[in-house]
Length: 110
Length: 112
Image 1 (cartoon, one colour):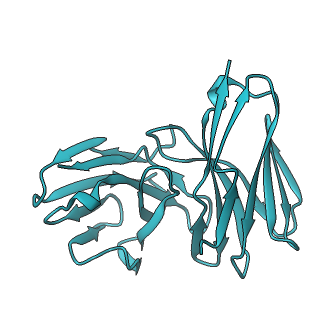
Image 2 (tube, rainbow over the protein chains, first blue to last red):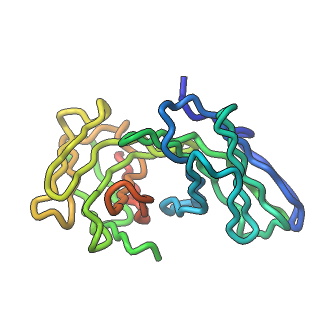
């Protein structure tokens, strides 16, 4: 079983709408959690990085939350744009080890 | 542009052939990572270097795979006797110590 589970596996929304992606993890000990955006055929690009003491962090229209007690994180995208269509990957680090989720494939339609 | 470059971007080869990929990390980054990613999945760790030393190798890295980083700068990943199951995106990433990893654009390998 993957130590980082993401949901939903895929999501289709209309341009301008908001959406929330989920990441649950069992990785321990916890070092930090990152959200990456990966466009088709490209390498992942970091959106946010959160440590144990951080509950929320924003990067433009992207807001990530972290609940280290329940080991859950979310990525909220506000006022979606067509360019937000991509895979969003949750990565949890433990010391020198990184565990990748399978990603959520987001499609934004006009 | 993340600053990590990979070459080639695409490679098509016949089963049984050898292939070599190159990764040039961000210049001041001492750590370099190789990942493999198949369609619809997150990246899977293969190996990583700190400077020129290869510190960790995944079980995914069979004896047909070899990676080098001879001078602690660029790295190469070679796959010998390629198999159809090797078809994937091979991603390289670099970081400064344990800070955020910056990924390259990847090399898409297709084994016919």
